[in-house]
Image (cartoon, rainbow, N blue to C red; front, side, top):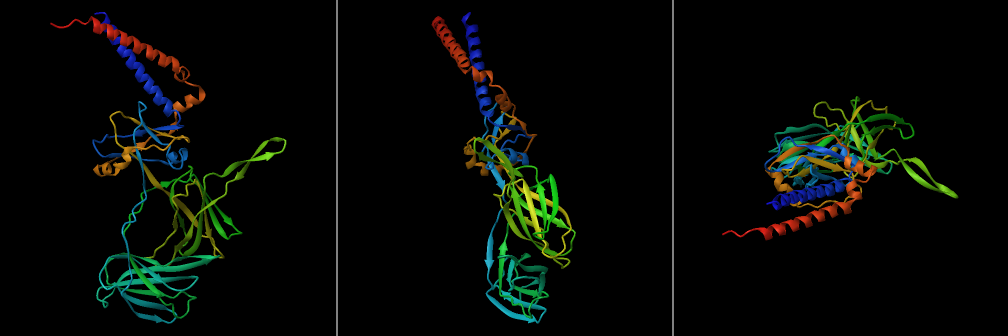
Length: 449
């Protein structure tokens, strides 16, 4: 009778030690991450998947490939996850060449027009109009018809232009149209002031493009500085976005000016300065701070051209996804024109999501920042899309703070790490005693009967 309580005590003690050892092992693993944040999941879904939108702080603290993120339960157990970035969908893109081009007419010094027949009705959302010239801006109007006799206006005012600079040029020859299926299109191009008497319309190509833009998040600028570069005849807008490694998608500017057409260049970098180490003879190496060079991200043009209702202003540029940076430098080349009256700027980044299946053992914590961590591989990657169809529950990330496990490891080595041999020795001794007690109990047990 006395052996049963001892057996129970030994079992409870061994179970406690096993749990403690498991928790310490998990804690030791997660102590390699510098920061942690709680995951706020208001409702635990019965099916589907949970998606956590990653805030800007995560990009600044983690590696650029985000391979060092870890999701864990309160007990320290790792939770499988997948990353998803919303890049939108290109959708279907079909081009249509006219079956016939006819009625090429012009009014000397004023306008040229041409009618194109595509042979049948088909959906179209864009038309490309090719006209000659090296430096121009020309207004264009597009009309549609099903019979070639009755015409309706599809686009009252759009613009074609080409800007030549240095050894290159930037041009716009596409005209966006409302979704239509007219068989016939009539394109009219109006002469620019410096154009010859006739501007031929060399080619017309129609497109049907149906795409979904990516879901993006606005990045609040920490500071915006506007200066004039007299040497380049450019306005320079420098922006500090507050966080490094941001996957930027678009920069858009606003101006008071009613009419303009300017070339724009966007540059980026992750930090203002960097440290270089120089060798010095008969002395320790010398460290010196130098300015971090700007990297070219994108160039193009911005414009707001006259035309009233129906005009197609464009004051922004899409940025390459691999141009992750904190600082932007936008150069607006003015040439001999007056400076534009800059009124504001907006920057948007791509939205990244961390998706996982909720488990009973919540709450969850996201660990960020471990340069030596290997990219995890989870089975969830192969069926996350199917779970997403079943439903998506949105989660939010709490405040990102220093990982207390990491701080403890930096300041002092935990007792469990210094005396691992003692912990495992005690565990082995308890298991041995438990085995002896169980064996004795088995010998003393009386057979029934």
